[in-house]
Each structure stands twice: as C-alpha cells, then as structure tokens.
Image 1 (tube, rainbow, N blue to C red):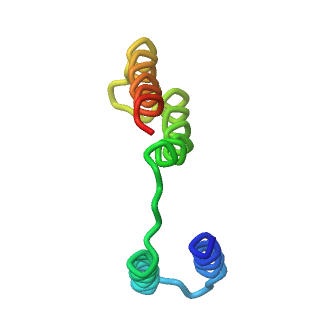
Image 2: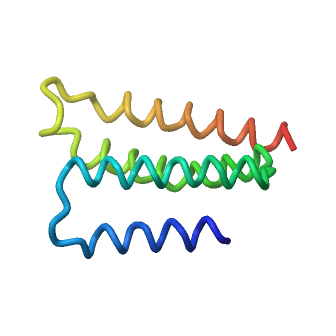
Length: 103
C-alpha cells in the first residue's frame, strides 16, 4: 500500500511539474526506481505466481486491443485477423494453464 501511494504521488507530482525536461525526468525516475528497490530490500514482498498473472492480464488486454484495432495502419505489412486470433488463443491458453497448474 505504501508503494502504491508513493507511486501515485510520484506520477501526480511529475504531471504537475511545469518546467520538467528530459534530464530532470530521468533523475526523478531513477530516484523512484532506487527508492522502490531499497524499500523492497528492507521489506520484501511475496507475490504468488497467480497474482502476477492476474496483474499482467490488464496490460495484456490493452496490448491485444491495440493490436486488433490498429493493426491496419500501424504495421507496414498488416497481420491477418486469423493469425491474431490464433496468437490470442495461444496466449490465453498459456495463461490459463499456468494459472490453474501452479499455485
């Protein structure tokens, strides 16, 4: 919970910064990375494989949506929808298999 609040404060403070250039953004991102690393070394967080898979599903759904909807003009050679659907089914099968087989 502390990391979530810390990360939210970090994102809001960077979004409200008026004079933020690339160098200061890099420095603040590195300081955020170091603080998360140090916090994890002090009190390590044990997350199961199932929780990791559930947390990775949200970005995965967003990437699949982008691939389906914007496939026509984001690629030089667009992939057919049959291949995209088969890749989606393979990806879903692997996630379900790992989710159910490993605790």
